[in-house]
Structures are given as C-alpha cells and as structure tokens.
Image (cartoon, rainbow, N blue to C red; front, top):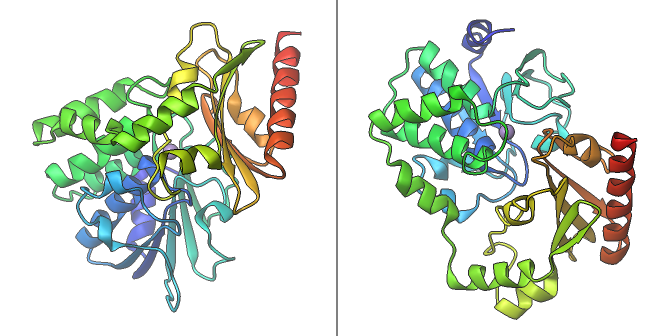
Length: 318
Ligand SMILES: [Mn+2]
C-alpha cells in the first residue's frame, strides 16, 4: 500500500471517525489534526477522537478543540486510526465500519481493512502530511505547525534515531511557510515552577546499575509539589537518564495509584531494542522508545521490570 492508494481508499468514504491513541503524544495528536484537514479538503464528514485528555501544551494548535473524547452515537462508514499498533490503543470496540490503519510501529497488528504501514518513517504525522500534499490541500502555517510539533516531539527534540533527512527537510519546508520553530520548541519544552520542582525530585531518584539508568515519579512527589496528574508534564523526563554516556537502557517509572498500575517509558540510544523489552510487559513502541503499563504494587513491578531488563541485556550480550 502506498500513499496514493490510501488516498484513493479514503475518497471512497463519506462519514469518518479519525482516532488517535490513548495517553496521546505529539505524533498522534498532530496526525489526527492533519487527517481532519485532509477530510475537510476532500469535503467529507468527520469526527476527530482521542479518548484521553490532550496535554495543555498542545493547546495552541489550530482546531485542537475539535478533538472529542467520546464517540457515543456516531455511525461512521470509515474509521482511520493513526499511530496505533492495535484497536485497544485507540480505545475502539470492534468496529462495524471499514478501518484504514495508518501507522509506523513495527508491532502493528494489521487490524485494518486497509493497512498503510511504514516502519522506516520517523513519525505517523509524516504520513498524514504526505496525504495532504498528495491531495493538493492548501498547506499553510497551521498545517506546518502541526507537522513540526509532531516531528519535534516524536524525535525527542531531534535526538532520537528516528530523526531523518525527511524529517529535517519537512521541518525546513514548513519554516519557509511561516512556522516559528523556536517558538514551538520552547512550548514543547517549557516548564512552570512546580513542574521544574517535580523534575528536581524525579532526578534525585536516579539509579544506575549494569548499564540501566532508572528514574521514578511517585504519587508522593506530585503531592509534595502540589501537582495533579492532569497538570503535570513528565513526558520528556526520560531524556535525562538516557542522555548519560554508556547507558544501554533508561527506564522511567510512574506510579499510578488510582489505576493500581505502574507506567514505564523505555529509551535506548545504544542499539538495544526497547520495543522488545516493553513487549514482554504487554507494551510496545519503537526500537529506541517504547512504553508499557503493569498492574501491581509499585515496588514489585519496579523490581520485576529491572530484573527482566537485565536478563534481556545479558541475552543480547551473550
Ligand atoms: Mn508515532
């Protein structure tokens, strides 16, 4: 499947549901917005859907308020999923509509009637942007801000291995169409005083053993700095342990007491495949950046994940 074939498939639908993934990141949010622009250009009816709330820092993107958190009563004839390896990830029940699955995860389960998968593409928003260009949709600074934001966040600020010539070329193109790159970079990395205090607490938990660097965010730390789950922004904290030279895998543990779960983010800039580590815990992602969530007591989960990661690295080396 290539972009032109996917565009032809999209033209066949009338009423669309566009779904990004739960616990949304910049890539899924901007892919969803860009797909909305495409459908608008094609004169289609559409609803944009991401179940979980959108972090505040993305509030400047045009049309962000169009994204709904519920799909009750909708009867689309076509569902487009973006940046999601399976249907659970977009919080959709088994759909009656035709599904167009657009993604760049190697673990994608090919659950669509149409599957456009490009594992070598640095971000899903690149794929959505390509469709817009192909359809001849007008591209201005708003669409440029969407794709720039998606690319900036998905590459961890242009440091992860998914930064490519294509990524930088599109960033340069959209800057020529009025995108203020430094303004977006600032928005994506800005931190208020309480979030900065939280970062301090989290960094104080840094531990390094056998090439594994870990940091933690507990409920108590949120209480101490006076931040709620919705107000805090810890997405980029993982960059600090993964920036240490010689580290093979960095892990960020987040205690989610109300859910009774622990969330993990994994990073590797060393060639270790953290997608495979995360998949041992029912999660996934990309070779250099992945995530997972486990039920259980915080300390037990932490210990288990560290042990399992050590075992994985020992196998790799052995
Ligand atoms: Mn992505």
